[in-house]
Length: 112
Length: 110
Picture 1: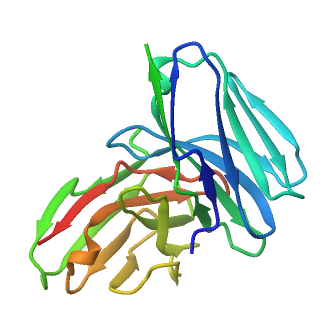
Picture 2: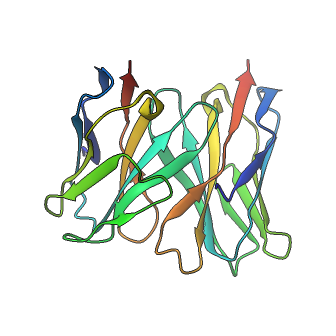
């Protein structure tokens, strides 16, 4: 069974607005990663946050991690049409030997 | 910079046919992975190889076999394809984090 659950399943916003996606997981983790998937393409790594970190930034991306609630959020600020894609969280469980477990993803649509 | 290359990109099979999906990476990574992605779902791990000469089962290994041919190549074989194996298959490689993905093989079993 998949460990990550993402919310919402789909999100549609106007260009320039901020987009927030949430991920919950079930077991202790070494790290949590976010990936983007454009239609018909493979996944591209966006950002990794380790279990001892609470917040991380990369450009317009901000990721938070709350290990007590077993949850993470991805914030994309000042969205652009090119941000339209599916976004997946993936957890690397303790003792999991780098075997990632992916959530079901959030389909983000940015409207011009 | 090819990264992870998967062949073929598309394939249609009849039930019971066999097929091997190929994956090669040029990043000198030790670990390689095979996933399947079904509509509306995230990726599920089929098999992985932590290093050349080793393979291990993931979450959904039934109906599949793998071969780590050398450090660069990791193939996935369907011995007797079933309609339930219709999916998009992704190969990935890594040296610790993160994983680097190919663009997938879209496989339909009729």
